Length: 182
Image (cartoon, rainbow, N blue to C red; front, side, top):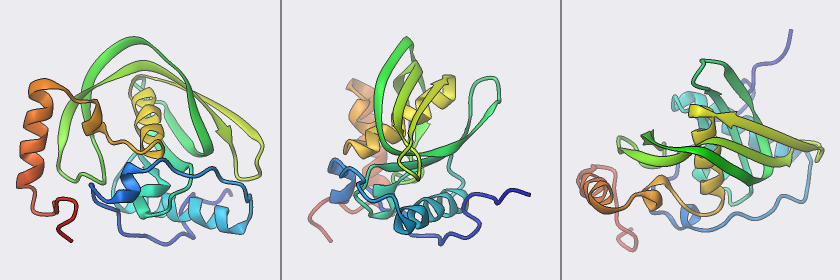
């Protein structure tokens, strides 16, 4: 019987935006060791505890290029895995404005433009090359998590009235603390 991802991990608090770690590009992983394996386990445990479909390392305060996912596509096919040092190499197809949220921005949702297909290249826990392709909702997840590792959140993709409304909702959120206010 295979082990369930995250079953031996520890749940960490999710870092809330605008913490600096969420606005900074993450560092490349160079050590493929037990510490990395523990990070991936902790990411899975935290993602499941928070009912997420993806979680980037900087969302638990670790500035490394790693994310995990357990996300369906539009045909309800489950995609489960992790990526180390991921790079979004293709995002194409139809641009879709779909409902998007983020564990680092709890309760905030907005119709966010993303491409309907994404191809991400990275590595697994051993450093072996991995390529993951997604469509529909899974493509949205891959783009969202890669954005996190590049130092941005879905708010950065909003413009005009959508951005204004999202920022207004953010200011009303009971968890929100503007940068510099502690």
